Image 1 (spheres, rainbow, N blue to C red):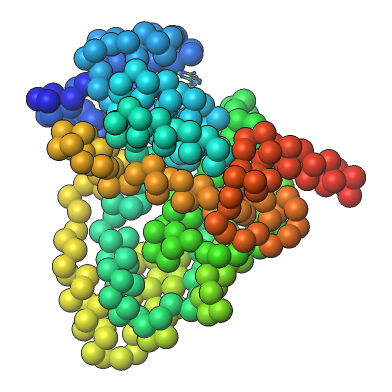
Image 2: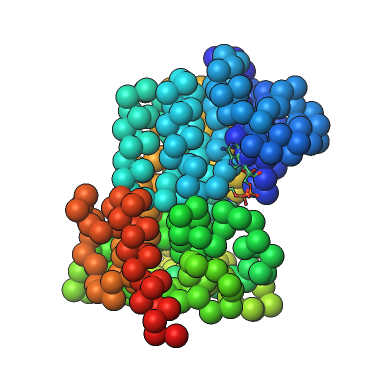
Length: 362
Ligand SMILES: NC(=O)c1ccc[n+]([C@@H]2O[C@H](COP(=O)([O-])OP(=O)(O)OC[C@H]3O[C@@H](n4cnc5c(N)ncnc54)[C@H](O)[C@@H]3O)[C@@H](O)[C@H]2O)c1
């Protein structure tokens, strides 16, 4: 395939990052955009000089000059639209999260396998050199055996952010600070340390008039030694949004962001520095790095670096966090199909019961 044709579905906030990234690639051509708000699609097409726009997804999906679809739509539409695009023969890159329930994540993954098409999920932090360095340091056990991790996503979202109708609701956003903002951090935790075997979580809604949580505190356990604490918020009025990750090992630590590995043992420090030098600084980062990788994966006939499998694993931990918060019980992973929050209907019903109990308490 000489030039890969791209179609953007959803012309809202994040779509600009997608079109700008693709337009940097000589081997990709953004053919068009679709949005249920046709005027928005048209304005977007004009701004980025795209030859085609429409208000109907089908118009884009039936085009033979479009090979990849970038899904930049509300969370509850990720899985249904991805399935439609895969059935139309397109490769699909979905913005995070992969879906709002594990049932939907499994359905879309099965469809990608049936269609033999690539399915990726946007977790752009994975392409940062420092994340790759952290992974290498942990794989080589250069900080010894990890026994504690801490991950914070303390962000502020103005009330206006939640005025967009799909946000702030369980049925359409699928959750709040955890599934939306902190999904990147959760993905990193799972990428670096694997899935924990138990989660205990509490959620609350503190500073916004929304159904979903704007705050979460969770603890996680991998085995008898490795534990983590996790905090996500969109109600943290700090001067700047703050992300932090810390992994304590028996012989050293990794801190992110910014990346600062440390050991008191001189020889380990040298090994850590050597390992970090093996990973060169990236020329492009963020969405640009991930979207370029996705295009190349299609051209080269290989899976994308961040796959639907990764999206599913992050979603499994997110689902366990919500299940624990709704029920007030610890939740063991892996979750099976009988878990109360596995299906979308089950998750929404469990959320409804949680909300009605919370309303009685206040
Ligand atoms: N990776 C990141 O750092 C990052 C950052 C921001 C947003 N996102 C993700 O991007 C996605 C979109 O978020 P946003 O902030 O751009 O939302 P948004 O509300 O600004 O844009 C969504 C657009 O989708 C359109 N839309 C709704 N239904 C549609 C349909 N059936 N067909 C076509 N278009 C439809 C809406 O009209 C709207 O223009 C979400 O999954 C969000 O989590 C990711």
